[in-house]
Length: 111
Length: 118
Image 1 (cartoon, chains in turn red, blue):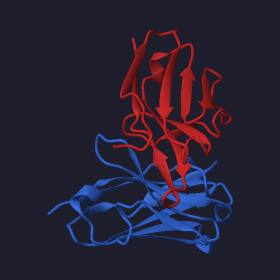
Image 2 (cartoon, rainbow over the protein chains, first blue to last red):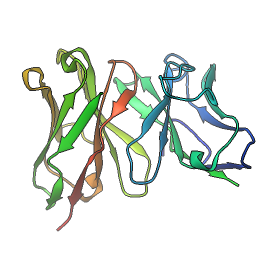
Image 3 (cartoon, each protein chain N blue to C red):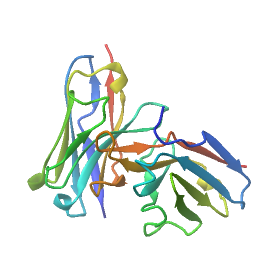
């Protein structure tokens, strides 16, 4: 059972937009930055979004992040078949002791 | 470019020990915190431990506290994870990842596989 809650799966047609939610609490998402990762089968996670809404260099602006209160959202526009992957949110949680928490992951299917 | 290369994984019997290593290059290793994150087969990401750039802070997941120990040698750009009293549920791909202490990881290595089985 993950501390952060994500939908197990989402799907949308190629060219459309999809959002992936990540729900937490006041001690984690509510007080810290949210990061988003993309992972293809058999490979390492790759950072998509850091500090709630900032994209590292090389990440297309089709990917966006937002945060409100104790929830965060990853948005992907202009969906491509190459976006089919697992997506994870993560953040810091200092309670009861300092640690990183991840969501359970969301499998994106592009129809 | 930033690279993190893990090694030391393998097959080990329950109750035994294993030490993982991770060598960083392409960035100032001694300026970054470094994490261990694992992923059991077919499962999601599970954070294991983090060590701050100067070793002042070492934090662990409850599932490994008292059994695993994280350390680093900045003169060798190397991170370690000493894993003792291994259990079957420690079986996973172990990734090292650099970051800023107090935030999730930024960039990740490719991982090393640990299998605990009799």
